[in-house]
Image (tube, rainbow, N blue to C red; front, side):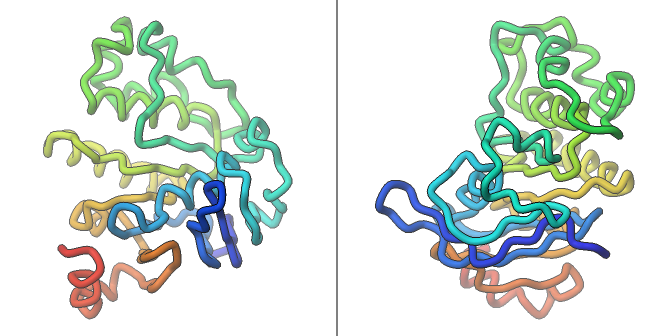
Length: 233
């Protein structure tokens, strides 16, 4: 499969603090890849650096061969990168439908509202409810749904299962498997290894701001000792 996202020698800083140290990653079109690692190892920073939120960076980020390092933050989505942050960013003063329709379409192939409501029945039931009245799981669904409507090529998800009830985690997993069948490319940051193992094609394991291992889901049995050491699972 052709590479959709290609990252080489990516370094990033928060002020004077050097937080990413030469990260290399390649995500093929249609792949679902998970970045594993404990808190503070650089997983979220990697996503923020890819999107351009974190501008103090050096290295290569290419999307479909296009150099993304000089693309301003407000143009990132127009080139096909959609980001769902851990904090979700739901507008409390808007209802579900208004939140859903807020981002503009940036490309072809985005989901229609009817498709989204079929994928997330809870959102259809709560479509007139304000953001303040949604549960954490419903907010996560809405944050994902409004990006899926825009037609982005690459979905970046940061800790989508954090703090959610098991039944909602299961539903998020079902949604991700559906997206995979539709050919969506997803880069997922996740601490819940058991959840990630059910949805990912490949894994990047990070520690201290660097990728320390890369392996396919088929290699999980032989990597468990390393995962126990690095993740404490």
